[in-house]
Length: 305
Image 1 (cartoon, helix red, strand yellow):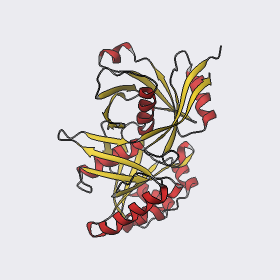
Image 2: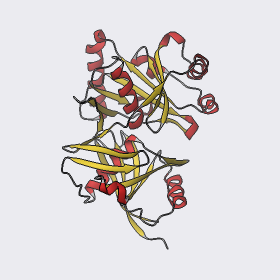
Image 3: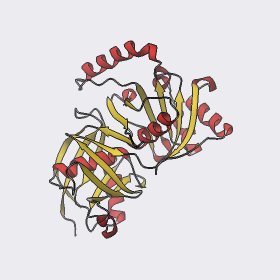
């Protein structure tokens, strides 16, 4: 029998509504079958819809505050970044009380994920990353689908922190912004691709000026990004994702470890879609990478499920 359940639609990685990545959150998913969750996620037609549940007994014993299941219109994900931050924010705003004041522990498909609280901004601990080097043949096929020349790709890695991406470090932010993919070709390859571009140090004054102009134009809180990111998930039916926490997490772990970026930076994502996402990256003294961002609630109420 359908029942009224608390619901929120939030915007993640932005302090201003409608400039980040939207997420639907069903705050009480108890009793719903996997098929019901999948049907509702398909209906919302957002990149992700989440369902909050009590933690399992084993996870609760390890400090989990709640369990979340994450669905795209096409299937369930073991982990995703913006659903992690958005679900946590909605859960806290709805009256959720964590066991620790400064930390929320989420149970999901990859296990337990810690989410730090810094005022209203949340940051999740990036899951363990597995990475490997793509074959030259595969890289060439993906490059062709993206319209890139080999000289424009500085480094490439397969990245796996639950979701799997082919990460490409390109020679500039402008190259990242100029990419016009053949999404059908990427879908045929079955390959999700994440791009990152880092401006050289000498370009910093121009980059800062551009970032400030963008922030003023969008009315957003000023933040100076030094990395530009784009995410193409054609195999999942999402040609380009506005702002992608899991990808930014794996890119950060890779690029910091290889010395391509500093241990703390801000990534911009979504410009080509008219968004102004800002992802705050920080590696702490213990080597843990934290991925943070603002979240705002755009819709709250009840949903019949």
